[in-house]
Image (tube, rainbow, N blue to C red; front, side, top):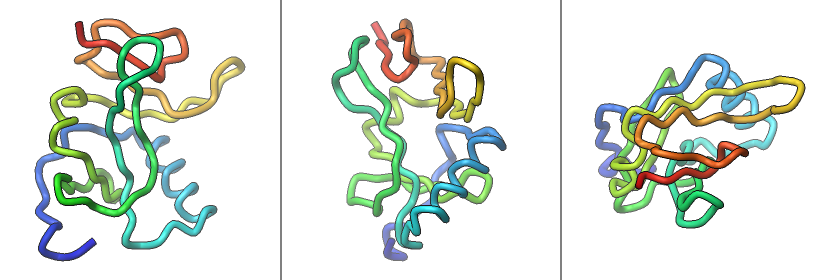
Length: 119
């Protein structure tokens, strides 16, 4: 990420401590380059209308950059509307293991928790 694009803004999302631990573990295990940040976003599709995007990527022109608990995060500015106030957690249970998304903007979500609707 180039310095002229690293304008930090207040983080529209939060990460739990368990999510941060898992993100840092994945970064190390997969040898993610230092110039990549955690990309959080949405994409059309899924059984409820939108699906969450979570992965490592380089910052792009329309991205905001922020840092949450030491994790560099990038997000397309247009996605903030759908994700403002969202908390990302890591859960490990008998029936579910993975990242969970607690999104106050979602009016409905699917049973798997990876897609949502705002209508």
